[in-house]
Length: 385
Image (cartoon, rainbow, N blue to C red):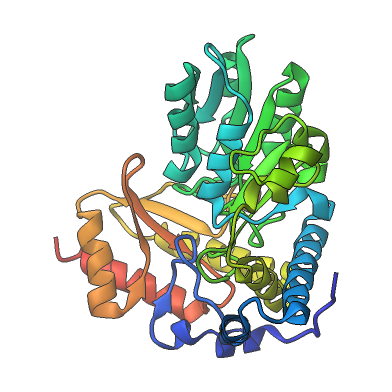
C-alpha cells in the first residue's frame, strides 16, 4: 500500500470546495469530494473516453490502476485483494450478497429494526421470492442488541445482518460479538459498514465476519458510484454470482470481484475510491478520527444545554460515532432542517421513520465555530415556538 506524504490537519478544508460555501454537517448522507480527487478522476475520465478501446497499452494501464486500487483498499482493511470487490455502492453490494447466498424456503434472516433501506430491502426482496423469513430485532437505547439477537436465533437462522454504525442514532454496534455468534451457529455474518468506513476502525479479519459492504461516497469523501465489498475467502465458494460471464462460470468463484464487478463497468469507481482513501491517509486516519471524536463530544455537550431537545446518540465515544442524532419536543424536524439550510446555510439530515429526529455528522473538516453556530441556530429556531 502506498504511503502518502503527511499533511497537517489545518490544510484539510482548503481542498474541499463545499465547506467554503456552507457549514457542511452531512457526510453521513453524501460527503463533499476533495478537489484533488475530482481533478484526478475527471482527468482520467477524459483520457479514457478519448482513447476508447483502440489503444491496447491504455487498456492495460486502466486495468493496472484498478488492480492497484484494489490492493490499496485491501491493505487499508487488512485483507487480501482477492476478497475485495467494487460494487457501485453499499446497496448494490448487499443486493448481490442477498441474492447469492442461496436462501431457501424456511430460512431465517435476522437483522435489526434500525437498518438502512439499502441494507434490509435486498433481504426482504429475496425472502419474498424464496419463502425465507426476515426477522427484525430491536436495538435498545444506547445500542444494546446482543441479548435480543441471542433470543431471536433458531435452528433456521442462516444470516445475521447488522450495521456497524446505526445510520439513525450513530450507535456503534457489537459486530465482533455478532460475527462470533453467527460462526458458532454456522450462519453468515454480513455487516453494513456504510457509516463506519474511515470514521471508525473497520477490521473484518479481527471481527471474523463473512462479508461486509460499504459506500465510499460518505465519510471517505469519494464521488457517487463508489462502493466496496468484502467476502471472506473461505465463504466465496458458498456464494453464487448473480451476474456472470462465461469465464467466471468455468473457473468458479475465487475472487470477490467476480460477484460485484460484472459487465462493462466504469473503471473509475475503484480508482476514485482509492484516491479518496489516499487523500485522507495523508492527514493520518487516527488524526481524523480523533478530530471527529472531539467535535462529536463538543456537539453532544452543547446540545445537552438546550431545553426541549433529547439526544438519541450514546454519550460514550466507544458506543457512538461522528453521527449525532436528537429529537425536538415541539418542533417539526423537517421544518427545522429546512430552516437551518435556508436561513443559516447549515446542512444536516432529517431522520424519517423511527426514531424521528435530526442527524448531524461531525466530520474532520468541520470547526468548533461551526458546531457552536449550529447550536445557536437551533436555539433560535426552537425559541420561535
